[in-house]
Image 1 (cartoon, rainbow over the protein chains, first blue to last red):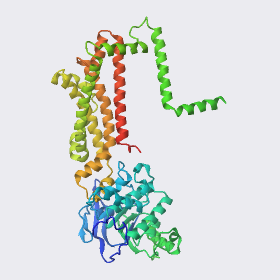
Image 2: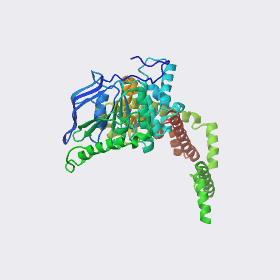
Image 3: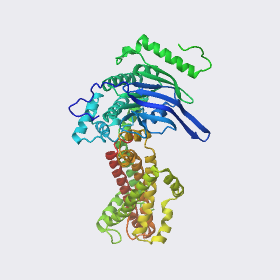
Image 4: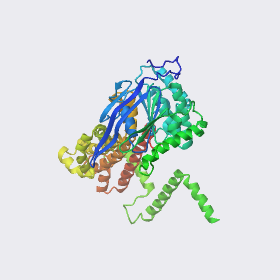
Length: 282
Length: 266
């Protein structure tokens, strides 16, 4: 697919081709060998993420969910199993997968605009056009007026918006987000969740989202994978039926939301106290 | 009542660091002047500020030991400058290699650990034995000083580049070389500059020490010669000049830092 030109708006509605598999993890396992022996981090992960899905991996810390994201990102190589994006085996990081980290990972020495332009390096664009495209994405996250600021002059929420604009500017097919809002205060977190949902609805990128927040998972996702720990493996794959559009705070207080939350919390409780809670799933 | 007044005054002074600094300097100069006048007849080795100023004028116009004062200053600056810059360039290269490559770092670590606690002036006799008393031996000495601190700080800076930053950059499909000069180097720059600052201060100290031992010109030579021939006011002038130039060098590098690593520490 050619990169957006000046004439086409940055974000058109792209019809998702729903049956195409964007990410496939087939029997993926990972472990670290330490002085006290082998630590199994992930075991027997079989996940398929379809194009256009907002797929969230939800789990407690230490369940290997970040390792999972790093494997899909191509930053670390899985020790077992097959990882592919759009049918092609993952051999390393690439421009088809954009990443957003909790730490923002902005380039402190570059202005906001230059940070976004950095993502366009691989695209053969004249300099002026590069700035134009970067500006479109800054506009999308509402930071056009801050283009000459430096990251240290921005709040946490603004920094993460720049990181999102930067990741989108490279026009990846898949967005990999590792607890992107975990470092923000509660209000800013909700605002950014709503913005992200809106962006996702407009761009229909496939998203792999990592979080330990049940609310965040329910509010954002189309599909939720609840992980169990030691070793990390999927405990339950749920499809989220909370109605769309949700980019509105009212979605958070609906009965459907609470029901989903109770169900997922039940699954997690069982994980934390496996001997205490028994019986059928709600 | 009294306490609140005092508190107000303290608050006012706290907000004006430059004023407080100027006042303390003036106070010191006054005490120094009075003391120098009172002890004039007893200690010929005690020189007051006014006499010192006059001596600066004399030295500036007549030179010292048949050499103009600016030549002494330029000689010291040249030795320190060449050694510092050469050491910084090699230090940055070695530091980057150490920061990037664990094997290189581990291989060099014992030498750095061993050399670091040795004060550079301890090498002066050895360097003179090897390279004579000419310019080269002094430059070698300063090179070693500068190299050590720049290399260690650069290595630490490169190692401290956050993994997330490198991972994000890699997703944009950039080459290893671009990753190095567009991400790793700027991210490590604040560390490098700290190394440069320490290296510059030490280079200036070491050049004076080296000139004390063996030199025909330079500020170190000036103070040693002045002490030998009991030219006490000249000795004072030498010390004050060394201090002032060291201060200016440090200020220069700080200005460079504010200009080029404005994001550092924010």
